[in-house]
Length: 116
Image (cartoon, rainbow, N blue to C red; front, side):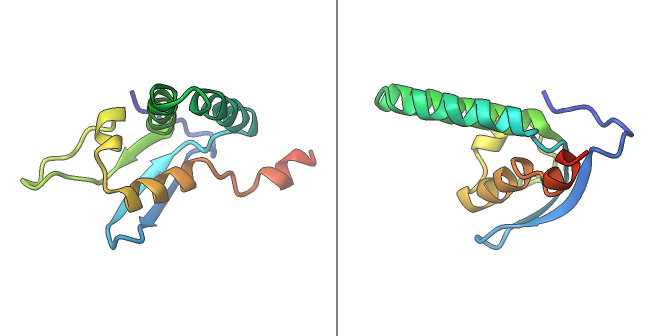
């Protein structure tokens, strides 16, 4: 389930360009440092458990990113909007997924806000 838009200045919007040439306009809630640390720790621990653990780690990453997305303008071949879900996110071309992942898991003004 996608994140809800909250008019608190924390929801970001931007155009995502992927190395594969596909682009998308997305709105997202950046992951906080604690969320990123928890996800990274889970990913490392699960990946050490072999192929089944690596698959579970991938599912958790996709679900976490999908949970941060508020909106996007992606559509299928017939022009129908694609619902934000872990399944639809996992089905994206790898370069576009990587661009969205990097955007959602980066909090550009975190260092400045940590000083307060």
